[in-house]
Length: 267
Image: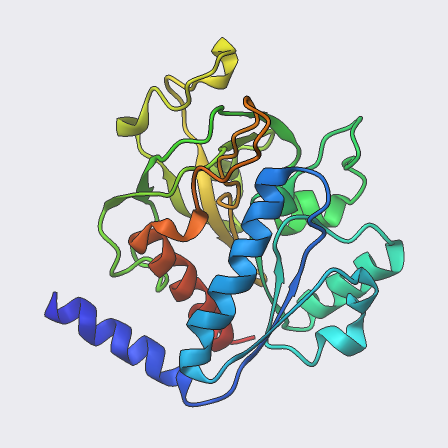
């Protein structure tokens, strides 16, 4: 416990000494579960980061995803979607290739052809994220036991070997990230989670398999995590929020550690 406290104190003291600027993009239009997460994130991040004198700006104006604006921020967040405009995509790629930092949640990695979010951005989905396209998901949103994979990475060094997440809808991807030499998987679904999901469709319940949920690409200052889908009462038409992403202390610690890692990572 003493070692953990000391590590976090050292980690937090570096970025806390300087004002960092975070820019979060979101769309928050379609899925109520994603909208709920965006609203939650846009409360949690400024409340948490204000303790360190950080600035958190959130916008649904994707025209701000241009090189001039991005370069004014230390870290860029995609809370629920990705840029669709070719010029915005090109500028985001330039921002990352020039040493910018990024954190993405849940649906920001989604791509499926045909859908409203086709896989029409190869650099982002295959080179940058490495995950490829969406294949399937669990249902209903459920908490999982997450396992730390890459213990030597600074983000997870002092996390417990396993911890319980907040409820989430978990994604499976077309690409096996274990085969990608550029990817460092940080968290995966621990087998203790199975069966994961309650259905009602049988394929929405996972009974076995390997599922990475958070990772980084060694060629970029980036962290993606699959969390970001709150449970919503769709069945009774109330759209009441039944869970919250920032309800797991260990998961929150992972998110904060990832953010601090990104602002300290060398180009």
